[in-house]
Length: 369
Image 1 (spheres, one colour):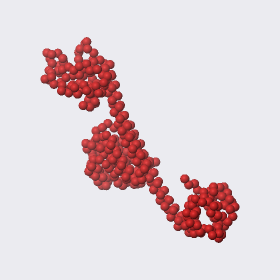
Image 2 (spheres, rainbow, N blue to C red):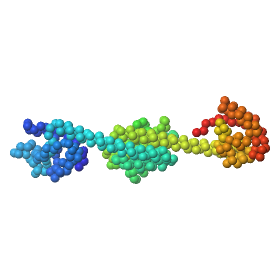
Image 3 (cartoon, rainbow, N blue to C red):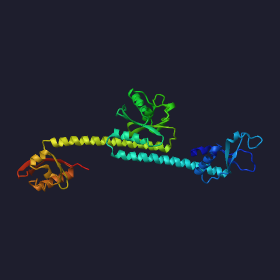
C-alpha cells in the first residue's frame, strides 16, 4: 500500500465521546490488512506510537448498538493531539522528500541531455535524442518537438513514445489543423500545462490515458522561436520547479540550435573565403604583424616567389629572404601599426632564386582567434 494512503487518517480526529480518552486519529481498514497497515505506519512515521486496533460499528462502541459488519472493519487509534501533529509533520516530510527526488531525477536527465547539446551538430538528431531521454522521467509518456521555419510555419516533427498516436498528430499538423498545445507554446512565453480532455478537443491525443496533461513550451532564443516542445504526461502532479526546469531547458535547446546555425554560417563563410583565397590571381598571404611569420599563403604567392607552401608556412619573411631591402618591412610595419592598413606600398621582393620583383603591396590588420 502506498504511503499516500495514510493522509486521510492523519487529517481527521476521533469524534468519539470518551471523556477520559484524548482525541484520537482513526482510519478504516479490513481486518486482513492490519499487518500491512502497521508496516506502512512504521515505514512512514517510525516514531509515531500506535496504541491499538479496535472493532467499531456505525452506531459507536456501545456493544448493545454496535453493528460490527461481521467484524470485517476495524479502526486504528493513535492517541493525543501532539501525536497527530507529529504524524502530519512526518507526512509533509515524505511529500517534500518525494518532490525533491522528482526534481533531482528531472535535473539529472536534463543535465545529461545538455551535455549532448554541447557536442551534437545536427538538430534533428539532437531532437530525437531529447525526446527519447525525456521518457526516462517518471510520468512522461511521450514527447514531440516541432521545428518551425523563420516565418513560423511547421517544418517537421520529431517524436518519441505513444507509438502511432504521434503519426495522427503529424498528419493533423500537415493538414494545417490547429493544435492547442502548439498554439499555446507559441503564444505564451512560459511553460503551460493543458488538461487535454478539456483544452485540446481537436488533438488526436485528447483525453488519452497517457496524455492526461500536456506540458508545452516554445523553443526560444533572442526573440526567435525555433519550434515547440510538448510532453505528454500521465496522471502525475507537475511541480512548479519542474516547469521551471523544462522552461530553462527549452531555452538551452534554442541556444544550441542557434549555436549550430552560427557554426554552419561560419563554415560556409570559411569555405567562400578559402575558394576566393586560393582562386585569386594575385598573391595573398596571412602573416603575423609582429614578426611577419606566415600563417597561410595562396598558390599565386607560391608561383610568384618560386617557393612551395610547406617551405613558407611557419617561417618569417626575413627568414625566407623575401625583402630585397629589409628596411622596407620596417617602414611597412610602422604604417600598419599606426593606421591598421597599407595601400599600394612600392616594394622589391626577391624570388627563391634571387630574382627581384617590383610590386605594389597592400595589407590590412585583422584579429584572428
